[in-house]
Length: 161
Image (cartoon, rainbow, N blue to C red; front, side, top):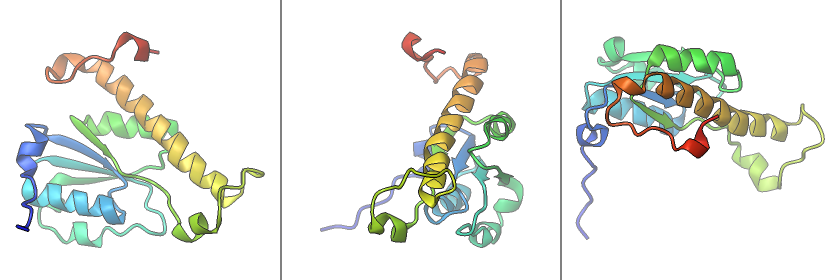
């Protein structure tokens, strides 16, 4: 079977110039950020809380990173900081790759919801609440700037607050 050719990044971006990537200091997010920097001329905003598994060294090693990579050190569970980061990035495109996952704990069994200090509760707060805060911030930002984005469709009425 012939080897598949990866899609052209510029074609995938379709003219979008300001890309917000959440979780861009993680394994998958870092690979996406590196590819965007290497294969496009987009400005890349990397929103990451920079936890224990984060590694920016491979991104910082790219010459393109100095001019087109901006690290926004934000925890998505902080709604106000997330809103400010979205405002600062002013993105045309958002790639939400941030997630807390710990394979060892997921193998041991389902979440225990008894305490807000339990590790499982922390992951739920980070992944679910963090995603909610990001969606709220991006939705509000794009509603405010809809006149600048002719290719972005308005939200359907049932999704308005």
